[in-house]
View 1 (cartoon, rainbow, N blue to C red):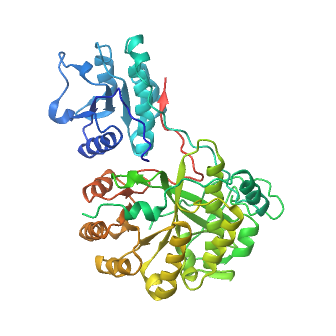
View 2 (view 1 turned 180 degrees about the horizontal axis):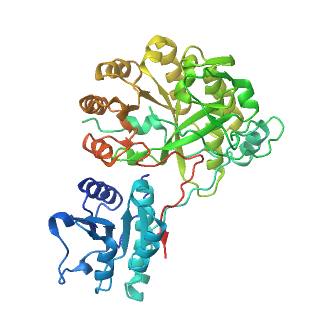
View 3 (view 1 turned 180 degrees about the vertical axis):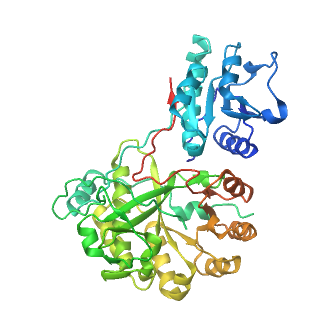
Length: 483
């Protein structure tokens, strides 16, 4: 979510009905972020029972209603009973069942929209509320509707080509688009803040298009075999690049704080899997430990940077496309020399679109940073000075390690994983980062409890399958069914 969220001017009051306290808190948090002016009332049927016949439904502009309400009650029965009441608000049915028949029945009973609770995200909620607002507008007299300015709707992201640009494409864009991109540099946004290991999908099924001469294509073969740790696989990286055996995907970050909403770009972690010579899939986090028949992880960093720039360039070319920021996890080899900086410089010289790299954030782990500290600090300073590129620390074992690295390089982000399983450590790391002025990301959120912890610890961003599954391209498919 970005600072350009729509203003839902007609939604003044929201009612959320659910028997799960965590989901009540979750939906309330999302709604308060999207519609800060709205009054939000929580209704737990386990505590409050059924609303009486005299319940004033008309006082609400929007209703979120769970299907399973506990004690034998369900949202469908409530819709059948109450939806005919005068002033009954536009209703969004939520369920963890994921049943299409249930969705159809919910709409027959009076719901306007249906959302799967297990796939809920602030993006999808924003879409649902936008549509519900249109329904609410229909309840107003025509004169009142004409008098109001219709709020801006969030632009749907265009499908982005998976293939990096050839030099000809890059140079052509430079001729057609000499203007300066207006993305706010990551370092600038993070530094203005007031100071108070993700598991990749086993396979990204993508169809590889026809590859033009000299073009590196990012798609993978349609079918692959998942790597097993005990098979002993080998990577031939030049061959993987040449034959489209690198599988990129994107993990969305959910903005949870006001500081995060300052960004003009939605943020994603760019990750890759690589097909080994035996066609097994090797996740990115395992690549440093496998044998490379040819090439090395540093070479993969070069490929990923080129791919990332191609994605950002395509978005810059697209009319009305939302800006994106991409996190790129670096291997140690790229901190040992200056190849990556020189590579980016050569690519950006061809592109000639200033600030196109200002929403790239490189992720570094503390052992690699401290081992190559002098070169790493020089690399970070060059990147920031040249293009406003940002930097994040990940896999930090304690607050002391973070503070040591932070003093040397002033990282804009700290990434903390729920896989650490130590809530006190997670909270301490978040507080240390906040005191240092760094933005915080909680990774691997897999449940409402995890998300609630992210909110309680005041993390700026959340990431995980519970929030949004990985994407194989930079767009979002709607999970909303409407009549």
